[in-house]
Length: 396
Image (cartoon, rainbow, N blue to C red; front, side, top):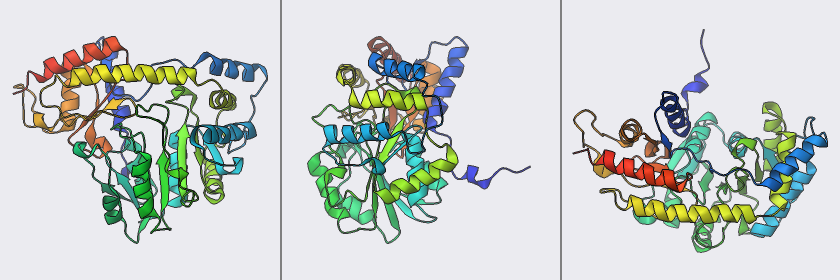
């Protein structure tokens, strides 16, 4: 019996793999501190949960429209106008079972075999694999910790060819925490104006978790807006990871294409989640901002602790809840039993020696770095970095 060759095109997400290894150790009684998963350690706000409970009692328990309930799509439009000053209509909106499904829909809708997709490094693990699933070719633009993990207009233009179909990026970025300013986005926009055949996918899932002023979207440039495909969701900003609700805003042509694809994969997402989503998007944002304030405190503490680790070169993230230090100074070192040759070795060493889970940078297109989350309690953050420092001190 033979499985599809499609399965050989892409890899299992390293984020999920490391979380799985951590769970296996924890099941054996090992006290593993999880700094690998990108999930707020907060509960969903009460008013959103009450919205879901009301939806259950009101019997919203039947199949939903593929693109989402009308009131949810209106709520997305309301949010985009309120928070981003962007004008969209419900026909521009498709809601999905998480932002990851939105990304998959988009990739299959706009990328053909051998089309090139430009992705600045570092990038979220799924970006490159979705391109491969669609049959496209990934073209990476390398950024560095010295450049604050952001690319320049010159780098962007140098990467464009006559095969370029799509540019995709996130701001705030997972894993680096880099955030593009309005001026930086304007510089990239100048390049895109020369190449009207290129779509621009802007992943803004960490929008509310920004530490340096207000979030800026590349969709704000009106002459580019028809080509911008904006992706967002409720997982990060509303602590709703398990609810699975993402959305995209795009031209009607792209939205209809994604709706057609989704109709054959999953149809519409959970009815109760959608009703809760309306409450989240149009309701009180105080819990969201309070969560961000806590992430600011944890970022400060994490950076204090990381800066005491010899050999780590670290950028101060402007958003999201990760640090992404360059750890290459440890390559070639050994404790007598384990030799660190790359980021994967270092992540596994920290898991088995310090009992702290992280994610190797190779998964994000940056082999010299490791991602550590600070979406954990302050006590666990302090304990984890103490263990990390102690484990690294054993390497010579």
